[in-house]
Length: 156
Ligand SMILES: [Zn+2]
Image (cartoon, rainbow, N blue to C red):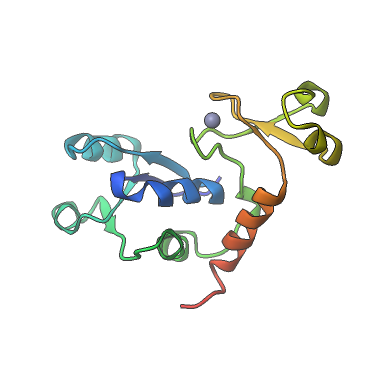
């Protein structure tokens, strides 16, 4: 697991989802009132990522203002600042919806739960213990890995 833990505010939910693809522990905080956000970050030792300049100025020790406009820019910003280098062993190890660590499941147990062509083609399946969504290394996963791999090498 990557060591830094984050909480993103309601303006950075897309970033939060992509940070989970990287393997980061991320809570998405969607309430508009920010008092709970501070309490959560302090209580769980999470860094707040936000696009609210005023909030970040007032909570400089807890938060980081994210400059990027697109999710890709934002992701690059956070990855380069906090993760330093690519750690592909953590890619796609969490549920992008729940933040839970995925668990390996027997191939036989997913028969009928995934499309037949997926079952035929893939050997390794993982599942979220909370929402029970199934994951495998298909085209979607491959495309995500490509984006993640490029974060440390692409410009700027
Ligand atoms: Zn889940």
